Image (cartoon, rainbow, N blue to C red; front, side):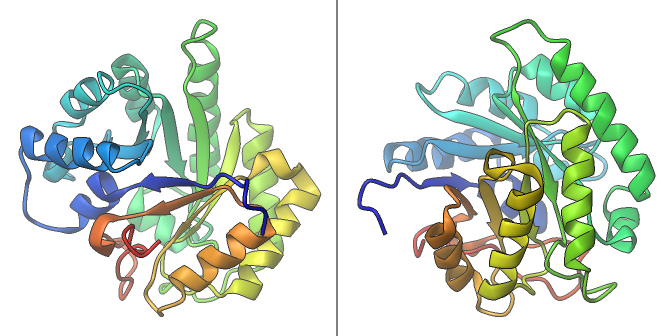
Length: 260
């Protein structure tokens, strides 16, 4: 491996981690976390999600957290949104990066965002149009996270050809890139390499630069190593491994930022 390769660690604990526990941290406590990681060298943090407070009260203060995080120099402030309404809120808040989940398992999609594949693709297109309507210099980076791409605890295995097809469909709607998400922690390094190179072969290497890995079966760091070896440059992780999808039964936390 080249000693000059730069790998970005994107901390997702303040979103993916906190949505998975009942404890609600104050905005001040969240900012202490974000600022501490920034001072430790982390330069991209997913600070929250624009979802209704009735669904995820843990993230109800995302607007305030984004505003405070934007005052930190050189920090890329990322958020997750499930739909156009969330995207519009993220645009109004000034987030630098917006991620939209597109589950490869339609069963998981219906439980997670209450939308079919067709409905989610339509929502992604509307979000892409909203981002593109922003003035030059104010447009955030728009990414579609291909969740359950490595398998789903509700549906089982997901055809790799389908994941590649859906990546192409999402990119054709005008998003900047896609990311591979091992939501259930079912992936292995060989599978990761096939999916990454398959998407690169169809859509170009610039279309996929990051992966989001979970550690349910203890494969998280092995998958991360394979990702870096083949050319992935952004890895998501969570402080202490906090997190996991509440709509993927049996899925445990993310890879641990400290270990990564």
